[in-house]
Amino acid sequence: MLSRQRSTLSVPGHLQKMHPKAFGSAVDVVMLDLEDSVPPDAKLAAREQVISTLKALESKKCSGISVRVNSVDTPYCFRDVIEVVQAVGAKIDSIVLPKVDSAGDVHFLSRLLDGVELEIGLQNPIAIDATIESALGVENISKIAAAPRTRALIFGIADYSASIGARLNSISGHGEDDSEIYPGHKWHFVMSKIVQTAKAHNLLAIDSPYGNFQDLQGLLKSAKMSCALGFDGKWAIHPSQIEIINEVFSPAQEEIERANRILNAVKANPGRGAVAVDGRMIDKATVRLAQNLVDSVK
Ligand code: COA
Ligand code: MG
Image 1: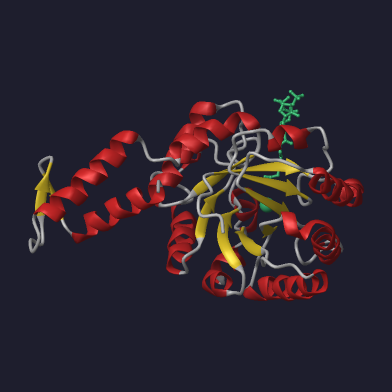
Image 2: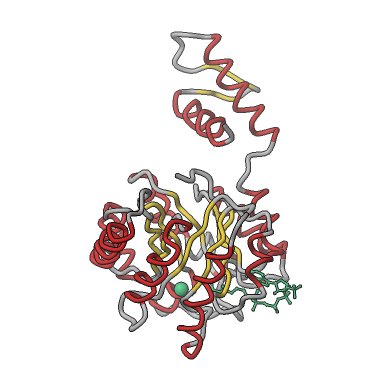
């Protein structure tokens, strides 16, 4: 199972010309989208295109492939799952389920996957990445995290924003100028809630995309903030965003060296609760942070 997911590129399912570019990029996970980047009159064509892209795929640079299906309250969801998994289930690591409001949505998808996997004799179960993008989703987040197959919680910033009635303060509603609008960070509560719940259930926490793909400085700031909060990675909606996201979510050499200095200092002083490194107090909590960092690059 994929353990590192710094970057995830969302790729509209119906736009075939973007598919080779996505699979040739340096992204960790390619997510072929059947949901909101696909207009209603292209929904069926997108499903067919995703199937034919994955059937034809012989090699890839990414370490994981996801397909985002439509939400359970649409006429498309169940057929998205059945048709895509029947045809190319062996090539998919996870289904991204959008607009998850309750654990029931995940149970429904998991049961559907049980049936299709048994039918086609799939050996490796497909995981579910649940997108939290409504007030109700946040209300029910612990049960969603504990539902079968859940592997990641993803923050869906624009839909969440609409669901709580927040003002649209930039064109795309995907993170721009947020820190200027509200002292602290406008999304601090929900982002921390997602991280805290994901980590309590041993899941990945993945942040929303940054909508202004021409503003790389804004992306950098947004990615640094979510990394600081404990997210494991962030979505991209344009290939130009992948490099920055990968870099932010990979520990710098300097951080790895510092973590190793901490671990070595503690090893050299057995039996001491706290020791000093670089003039700072190091205790068991610091050691856990340092160990997490060193483990993440193994
Ligand atoms: N995946 C793969 N390739 C992509 C891409 C993506 N998400 N977004 C852009 N590209 C490709 C373009 O096809 C183009 O390729 P080319 O040079 O071979 O022609 C190149 O990257 C440059 O694209 P650009 O012209 O800068 O962007 P655009 O104006 O064509 O598209 C968006 C801008 C935002 C419409 C487009 O990036 C997009 O559709 N992103 C995904 C949206 C999405 O998935 N939303 C749902 C999740 S929130
Ligand atoms: Mg959404």
